[in-house]
Each structure stands twice: as C-alpha cells, then as structure tokens.
Length: 225
Image (cartoon, rainbow, N blue to C red; front, side):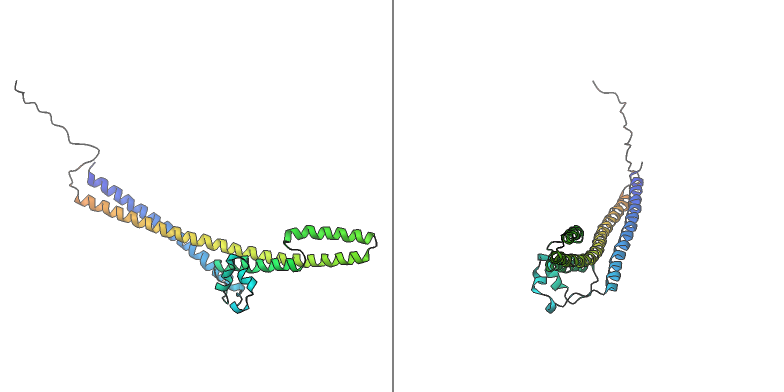
C-alpha cells in the first residue's frame, strides 16, 4: 500500500472521530446549560432571600466553618446550587438545631421524635392510670412540644432535602461542562493530528510504500576466483 494512501485513510478517520467527539461535547454542554438554567429558574421562583449581613446573628455567622457563606450571600436572592447548599446546610440546619434545643429535645430529628412521642404517650397513659393528673399534664405539655417540633422538623428537613437535591444536580451540570471542555480539547487535538496526516500525505512521494518493500535484485555476475 502506498504511504500517501495510508496517511489519507488515517487522517480522514481522525477527522471523522473529531466530528463525533465534538458532537458529543455539544450534547454534554447542552445538558450542563439546562441544569444551570433549570436550577436558576426553579430557585428564583421560590423567592428565598438571604438575610442581610446586619441582620445575621453572631451564631449564624460562626456556627460552623462554612457558615461564612451566609455573609457572602447576604441580601441575595437564591439562584444557584451553591447558594442552595449554603442555605440548607448552614441556615435551615442551624435553626432546626436551635428549635430542638428550645423545645427541650436537643439533637432530635423528625425520625427520632417519632419514638419520643410514642414514649411520652405511654407515660401519659400510665400517669392517668395512677390518677397522677399533675404528672400527666406535665407530660402532655412535653408531648405537645414534641409534636410541634416534629412538624417544624418535617418542614425543615423537606426543604433542606429539596435544596440539596438542586445543589447536587447543579454540581453534575458543572462537572458535565468541565467534561465537555475536555472533550472539545480532545476533538481539537484530533483535528490537528489529522491535518498533520494530510500534510504528510502531500509531501510523501507517490512511490513510497508501506507493508511491502522493494523486490531485492540478486546479482548473477560470475565472481572472480
């Protein structure tokens, strides 16, 4: 086979692969843009606005290392996945924790409050059976507090879950965009290599062949003694 023909075949194949890779990159970019725009549209519709910096308490600013994001986004309307994560992890979570402490159930969650309520109901029934009206009344207050807190926890954990889900999708979109850039780079490299193949084909003599050498000519002249 002629070397020039082989170069053209490989170069043409490289160009075809480059086109396919570029199309894949375009598809991934489209999905990344969709994820970003969808997150912004849906979050904006909720009209969640971060508290102004001067309205934030010292605890809100310093509760955890990441709480500084509440200062960074102070006064802004939530539109990005990063903002959703910040609000869910450092604003809602803090206020849920504070609510549990104020209600007398530190560390409680929606799930754990279920067993707490069941236990309190059992204690109330036992107190009433003993005609301990004062004890039953005190336990009833705790049960009411636990019931109210559980409703608060349900609302808070639901919103947290939704916001963190949006954040997760936004991260996937960002990584897809990064992957698309790498794919475009690979496509560009394939184009350069293919162009090099075409150039090499043009400068290669038509007579040059590969996978088959020239026939060897054997000398039949008599040798001198």
